[in-house]
Length: 164
Image 1 (cartoon, rainbow, N blue to C red):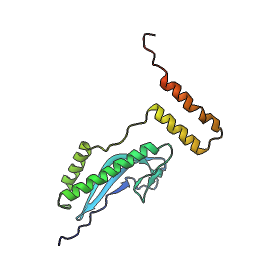
Image 2 (spheres, rainbow, N blue to C red):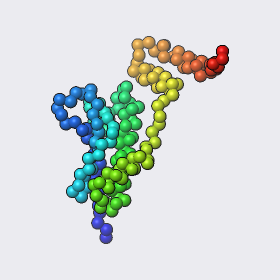
Image 3 (tube, rainbow, N blue to C red):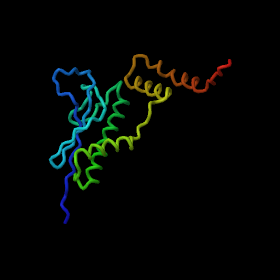
Image 4 (cartoon, one colour):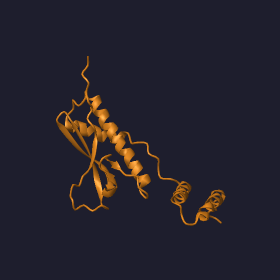
């Protein structure tokens, strides 16, 4: 009967452990992976404002103003996690040198970018903004009811040519 192998967990830590680090300072996220007595420290190249980092979940918090950016960041971290686990399993559960492991992470990161939606269009942004304001319970609710009509005018207004 085959021996059950436990796959090590991929962890993400902030690079700075300096207690003087400001809460509003962007800090680099480091991937940490321990296997077979080895430890990989790999820079993800991603940064997060330290006060918006959830240490327990090892992900960026969903906060207003950074929601889309941090959602995409968390998707990229999930991609790193899947990539590292895949490399570990495909190489006989960690029968691989540290250097080769790091090279495979770098190559995999270049080859297979995670599928993340781009930035919203102007109209998508306006709709999202209106919904957030409505949900917040803004003081003048009638103001937000006017925007869909204004948006429809913008959507059907023909573009003027440069010669006009």
